[in-house]
Image (tube, rainbow, N blue to C red):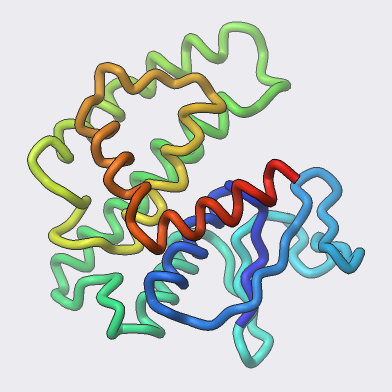
Length: 203
């Protein structure tokens, strides 16, 4: 199994999930600007959208999109307990994966990371994002994880919250989110994945 990733991108969540599951995988770095891998291969020829994460399965099949990749990892390694088995709890997992992917990843952080965004975009985006962060903060105010235990949704949320530094999104009014992020940062699978990708990012 191969995971195509870019350092500290959303694909960090898949690396965390794989480490949490104790799974063996080959990690192939994709330069986010050139879309080249270390051996010079054109990633866009493998996946035309050029987006990570991309999982290549043992039979050669390709799987993209964080929510799909993360749930595949959880399903393939059920002993890791990365996803609930109860039907309603599983729907809750999908709810949070969707929330993170749309309300935070795409509508907040990706917009703020876009250097070509027109003037005024930042102010408007932060205003639209505030109720979403408040909603998340309220949910985390009396719980350790998004669900009753660590799941792939937490891996995804951790990866996305890291971008608050690069985008200068202040979490000062979201103490529960800040504490949640701090707790996850020292979880062994998270700490290992983050430190490895941080070194690659700096390089």
